[in-house]
Amino acid sequence: MAKAYHSAPNRTGRHPMLSQTAEYALRASLYLAEHAGAGPLSVGDLAANLEVPRNYLSKTLHLLARDGVLRSTRGKNGGFWLARPAKQIPLIDIIGPFERLGERQGCVLGRPVCSDSTPCAAHDRWKEVAELTTAFFERTTLEDLITPSSPVPPAGK
Image (cartoon, rainbow, N blue to C red; front, top):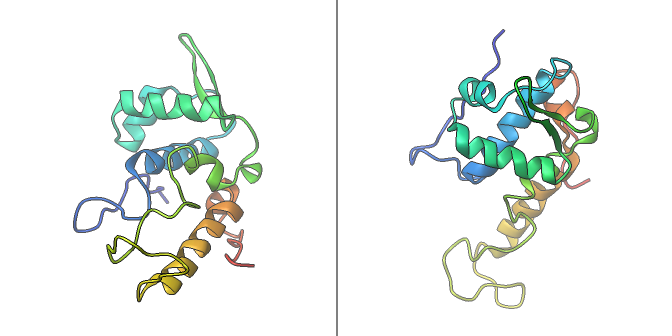
């Protein structure tokens, strides 16, 4: 069965969960994990298979290499590969450089002041969802997503 490497946007054309950069980083890392052992994969091949802009992906992959998620080599046979086995790479390592999951990004209802001491109507519920989301990215590895029999660890435990 062919793998799906293309995003499935919502009505606005974007995923609300991750920034475009984090999504590209995650999709590329997943592709590299599924093709581990194939040697370095070029940015051009990755961009073509993922249907993402080559230059944008190149910058994203270089940041992941700088952060130790990927390795790279230059030249005719150059490209990128995972720096560690997929089971040792939590998703937070991939999206972390591009997302601020642990930080509050403002009130979900748009209130100018919303905190634990002055919560909006959705604050407590949204805080719980945000914490579960962060836990998912911290506890889920690339291997969890490429091994069908591998259960994804429950968030919040």
